[in-house]
Image (cartoon, rainbow, N blue to C red; front, side, top):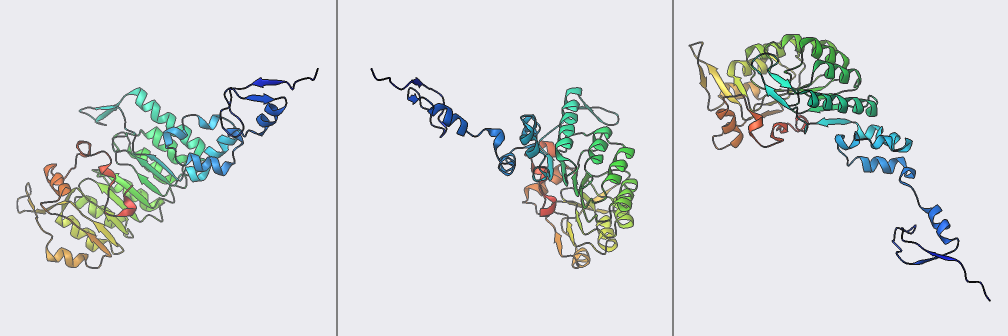
Length: 334
């Protein structure tokens, strides 16, 4: 009697990825094909990096770096960590009547700390752009921890400063010698901070202020940042006198954005202000030296209407998610 070749039924995938439910394998064939299957961990690093580039920061820090050494190597690639974008992450907070005027609950704070810790470990100091949501309230410890591990930072978007003290922000700025661009809120006492930028950040050239710019703030910019090239004050309250001070006192300024601003003029009464519906010819003459002078104060403009409704202090939380990230200056939008 002739022996029949041994066979077995297989319901797993063939090495070409096609399911062979019910098909018959000859002896030895299954072992040969299984050995030809490539495992995920055997993928080339550049292919893994390409895949991981489609992930957001929450996916990158979810644990995929622990799959194997090859995946961790790919997760640490500098291409994945040029930007740490937390613009979709908000603190779980309530407003309180005294400083810092917000209370962030403990689970929310711990989640941010964990994400920052993993991101700093994987990025290996390669982050050059760092973006925070305007309702993501970073603490002093979280900010300084991040600053010490991002020495190459060139651009910072940090609109919410409620929990950051003078010592914390100054320590962070001292770590960022290469800082070129900053988005910040309007603050009551700007000299200590702007002076810190002037001392530490020799290449600083670009500033966006999210909030009113008064004469004190304008004079601070003139005193400490005379080489400033780009300034955005969009969607805020702006005194005409402060605008003139900026135009006359920042000789290297190239781009000024006052789109959707509520422009005021000081009246003879110190307690009242006069809204200016149009920018007068004298301002236009002063601004003519600029490469770009961006303005918009039309009654039909939605953003101009919102700035007026909010009395020059735009309440971004009332509007479309992500609207706060827009800017007519492309390098300041994100």
